[in-house]
Image (spheres, helix red, strand yellow):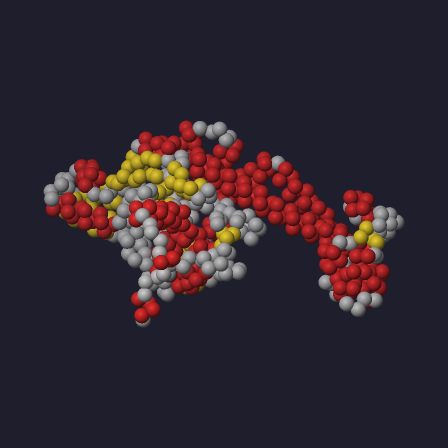
Length: 511
């Protein structure tokens, strides 16, 4: 104990100005919050916690056709491998991605009690189950084709690298939006209709100089999952132009006449993130304070038949239009939504308008498709190289078999294969089937590479003898066609854009 109480040696004591230390520490905390917690990446629209949950589900192979598994397992894997902040922090993030009243297109398919629009809490993670939705599968598509960068996880364990961003064929940020509070800034990107966003993406690709007026014809405004009515367009236009704006969102109501001569105001849709029980409490308070008159009762009849059905009974001879205006004025049936389009661009927060958000998504998809094509080209070239060696071997199969049988070890056989000169004479029975480009090289002495010789050496003799030249040549021609296709894509940016348009139209039809 005496050793623990001893002060550190003088050489370990460093004098610091408290102002400088506070500034440095606060800046470190602020940047950590901005980049690693609160703000989404403009490319896939995900925060690190969301991305890690989806990646953990990808590793668990929880595709839409598979069984749901316990959320406790998903949260445990996410926490243990990628996000060391405890399951109790991860679970609410998972739950939100499964709630169709929060997400325009949910990213997680939940089974069990995942809460409600009335702010009811979800069941504990040990009771609920989940798997990915089709949208998440599209976001993760091509992840294994070197389309994005991977970095070590928090404890740098081998085999536990995580992606810095998802390939994201699905335009998640524009469709589902995002909210977050960082240090000194906050974001509130609102949801949009997926078909309108897909049309806007195609329009920007077809005409990079398209103006905001034209985009507004395609995307007239946000599309909230809970419905409601947007009043006016000035706030929308301002937000789409500058990245910041305010819109007024109202509940949808209609009037039903009763047999007793009285009227009822029925609320069918609520503004985004407005809770039903709060509306009832506000109505009761406004009636008590005599701000809302002519209301005799208010009840919530929402259920399976009607997701939202709130019934406000009116007194006899009451004017329903007056009551509706009072509801808009004194309750959350009318709210103001701030649109703040802040997202991370190259790990820096930036405020962006609608077109700039779309342009960043397109740039990301171009990068993904280019990297995927390079990867597939490399794999096709490697396969074509091996097929060339197999074709040489099969065309001289008797000598190859004799050479292998005379070798005591596989390494010796590979060495002999590499030392032997191969040639396919024009009068060889297989020559007419072999592509002219390969025959031009095969008509003179050709030596196998180490890769080709090892590919032959890995085959058992019975497999080698059983290879058919027709099948090898057919596969080789297919690989050559693939190589030419990949090279054409890499040489022409227009072909890359055509792929993006095709993918985007598929997303539009699917969702």
